[in-house]
Length: 417
Image 1: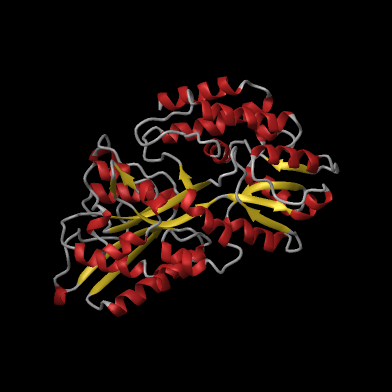
Image 2: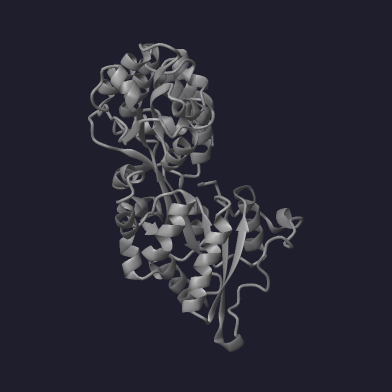
């Protein structure tokens, strides 16, 4: 999810001449078919799971039944291939009409995309969660239709809480530190709080702490990891969690996925997880007793790290705007959209979708956090370098290095791009 898809003017046709178009699906350019007044929409999507192809086929079948004069040609690619495929298509004047991807700022900067308000109805536009509208926009113009969401929350082992004499889940950092230390004191290899600061997702763990103190990684214009007092306070408290024995051993080198496996087996008291973690527990240890609560923050006000992928509409020759609008409006109808999102294991980005899933006890804690979700500044061209810097450097705070020095190093790598 949310793999980087960058498009820059510096790429040349010559650099792409060796890339074959044979596997790129669409052919015949972008012109609207004139046979019987029919229109063909080219839809390029990545594969999220083994369900992806079938789910889109079901959507397309229903859409074509409703609009028999519009045909949708689907192409499913792996995330690893998506960048090369779309770049090749654009250079060959065969850009998709609709694409599912992550970052879109480069496409928007080159004038390739419709503003979303031009290709959805006012009803669909108004249904998107406000927090996702902001992350779908560049310079105040929304270019991405939020497709899927993921939020993060704290998974709490209630058996370990009870053994440690804790009666309710923590809401503030101070509560979390105290509770985690009590759980760690149970011994037998149990860690109070799982803090994965290894190379897999140190940026995500850090974001939960920074955002939970009113800090920031920056915005589309500027990366601001260093020089922000709120960020430094958060990093210092993270280090305090480690030095006072509230976390697993060697937190600086621990990755999220293997650590979550340990949580599932009942050896970690609390750890940040995602909606798919619910299924992981159901499969790996259905007897585990746990609850899902907001991640504690410095002041107790809930904040979550949000991640979103988008649908974007390419202008091409401008002839398919009406057909694109019909397709997007159809797709975001709750009866079509919600089953798609739920089967893929994510959260809906629409208000109507959230309302429909509110009765799902496993998803409700995450749905409740969506309005307070804060996002990575991934429309900033230096975000990729920032992300990599967090993954390689942030673990040093768990190894005793001064947090201020670590943040300076991350900022330097971000600035270098």
